[in-house]
Amino acid sequence: MKSFGILQYSLQHEKDYVSKLSEAGNALGFDIYRFVPNQIPSPHIRGLKYKQKDWVEIDFPVPNFIYDRCFHNGNCTAKETTFIKWLKTEADTTFLGHGLPGKWEIYKHLKQNPLLNRHLPQSIKLQPHTCAKVLSDLLIKHAQLILKPSIGSQGNGLMLITKKPHQIDVQINHNGRILRHTYDNTGSLLKMIKSVLTKRDYIAQQCLSLLDQNNRPFDRRVVMKKTSYATWEEIGRATRVGNAESFVSNLHSGGAIQTDPQLLMPKDSFHQAEQKISRLSHCVASFLEKNFHPLFELGLDFGIDRSGKVWLLEANSKPGHKAIQSQRDYDTIPFQYCDSLISEKKGVNYYEHNSSIKKG
Image 1 (cartoon, rainbow, N blue to C red):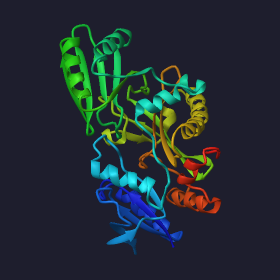
Image 2: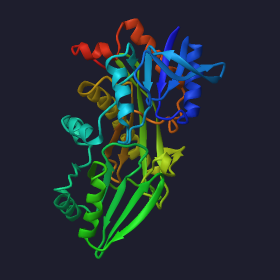
Image 3: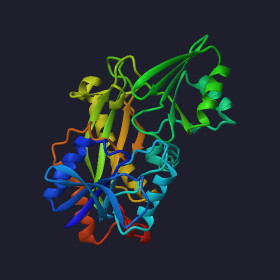
Image 4: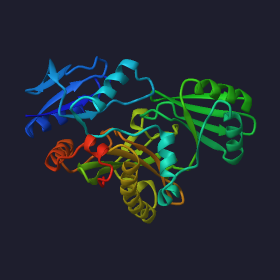
């Protein structure tokens, strides 16, 4: 029996998705386990085993395959880091993918691709000693800026800075709620930003006009997955729409799925943008895997501005699954990938030690 482990920071996360995944895996001949990284490296792991549509607490050997669903927000403990590193370097297992670094490192690499570079918003990493000049210069050039945590997910920590004649307005996405602040001058704003930078790395990005015909923020989420060790496929895409009072469309921040995406913009513009997104999605997946560790899945967020231009906003190696309304058997894909690695006698560790292998 093949074994498949799902690694999570909390066993309360993604319950619905994990249950569907586990049922599909059992039907395909896999033992399914769930476990957290807050434990000591050992040949036997403490966690839960999926059995007859229920979970039983048990000690089990390190699974043959590990699906990493830990969402990093820059607060991983030393114990968790040590355990995950041990799994990746010393344990006899294969991770489906090793994930991506922070947003700034991803941006720097994507900039090197001439095609992708044309679709990236201008971005600059903020440093405590230079952020005053950087932000002042950007606010002269752009009336609005987006500040993004370099490490994080679900839109948490995003800031929208709007410069007005006599004040600066700041909106902060905090755990799905939009907090609003007003600063009377650039100096008071910079004091706040410097304080934030002592805790988290941020990048500053030009704010694009990515609004639908009802002035609501929206984006197109595309999910790419590996169905074999060398094949990327688009599994699905969806339009996420925020409310008019917000600047984010993320589902965790009050956004919703738009069932008829063409209502967001003129039909011809939307059709052309969709074709461009298809080409860019495959280009991003192949390019990122050539520059980083082997990957298994990607969530790509695209914006479409009022002129119809497509922008690549973000690439995430651990996408959520709520947005995708796929017609195919979504929950079996990780196990198809595992079977492909077995039949081809290839896996993550094999890739790392054979850099000449052509990936995805």
